[in-house]
Image 1: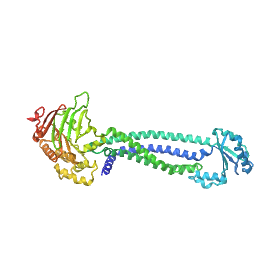
Image 2: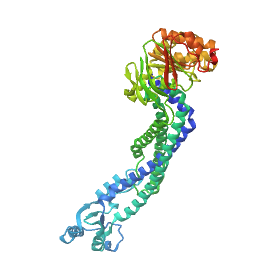
Image 3: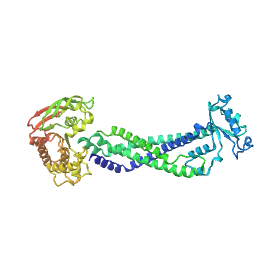
Image 4: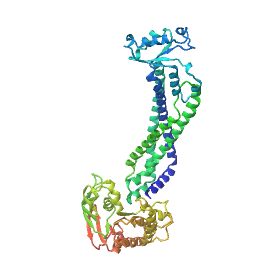
Length: 304
Length: 234
């Protein structure tokens, strides 16, 4: 009965304050969309880091059929050349620079490629012999990339030596800046949302002060008096969070996996299902902010 | 039922106290008029019983319990034991008579079945049978006050506080309200009524406590009251 009563009060509150409730929904929707966008950018960065950052400090790619560099003039790498390169990398003279050396065969390269690009249509058109075998070199000091480059870039059987860390870092910097901007906008918008919830709840409490005054007199508990107001803010914020989730999912599904993935098939994009990992956090964030904001407002403006 | 032990209430340090060392005891089942001019402390008395305000000095006991010692989360329970009626009725204008009375039961979690059973009985007690579905604006002042009384007693409180309940009503209607309050009192409810309507006080012949400038100046078992200017004493 009390539950039904609270719901009834909630309904009448939402109806009376419709314009304000809609504005809470919209503001939380926009702000949580920005929070989510920042989150997705971080997920995207992690997705790329996850594969590249840890493993590929320096890659010594070996010659394949279609390599064009001068050191590959003699055709694909021979077994002897591969053994020489491996021996040199593991020799004592390089031990102060090199911490580990891993060999990646063409088949393994394909396996990694398929894992990484699982969401991309390019996966089906790549075969193992198109991918170069390589030595994956972890450096003791990643800054000493030049040592490896100088030593191996003209060695017979070596196609190129690449420090992909550098390239990736530049990209990650851009993405981090973008996610910081998104978070800043989100922060400002969330502040707006909190203040808007406070104002709305204050108006709502004022317009129903007759009811709450009577409730207080006849001995209604604090929870029964306050709950309809708190729920009003929380429900509006949760609806905003749901809208933000739907928007982010649509962006990930149609823009990232649809358009961008086709334009850049060699880039691994996060899948739209990862938005669903973010969704509960967004909705919770919206709900908690609205709840705390309305409780603080009620403490000031609603005597119980 | 209600005991004031040298209670002083100061709202503002620069002015005189609203209540000044008031000691007073109201027994269970009593009917007490609290009389005095505006500003004599009648409303403060009622607010202190409800724990709407804190005493500055002294102690207020309701049903044997010092209200200062009731934690804030227990205050609703204290108020469930006290019905209150005001001069301005304080009905919800968009609810019917039945819904206004039922509201007091809904908010403390009474079941729909109990509400449907209790509310018509209480409306009959206050003389409003058959007016369940009227809206407050369709009722006369006296009828509206009866609704307010019904709402105050529907949860069967031990105490009924009435703050100038006849203040907005004409003498004939007021007598009707007094009959209702008398009936409620005779059912065992302690009634404290603040008023400055001397006709009513003199007709009822109940205990009269007169406040002046925050002090009890008179406490008569079957008293009368003559307004301070004597205007309405004729």
